Image (cartoon, helix red, strand yellow):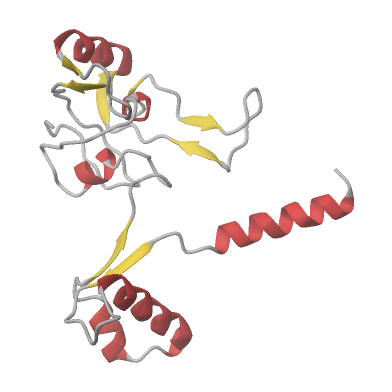
Length: 185
């Protein structure tokens, strides 16, 4: 890699690592016709950032009253949302997937990371998988495939089939997510 290309790559990586990927929301009454919870959330976050280390206590209290929320689909931490739902206390999770592969990474025996570049370990820029269930992913996958129901829609242009099923699993400890072992989901 030439020095110029190396410098450009470094700049891109630095910018990516500093990017706020969250879609912020703040639940408050709309202040006008062009305001909504998304604009209010971004405004709140920008105000905190502008304040730096001198943010007034009243602003911080406003931000911590449970109405400021970052919406993510899990893609940057586990790509399915299931681990975050379980970490938040859910014991029943309804999930929709465009392919099930991301879900099976939550089970024992699945690889802990997936590289973005085949045959090359791209970590720390890679998918990191969160094992939260103690069952082996192959066993869970096979059981799901045997017991699920596939609904097909012949002639459909977008959704040609839908697979519906139930998986019962027990959690393992995952300290980073705050998941404790032994919970039935």
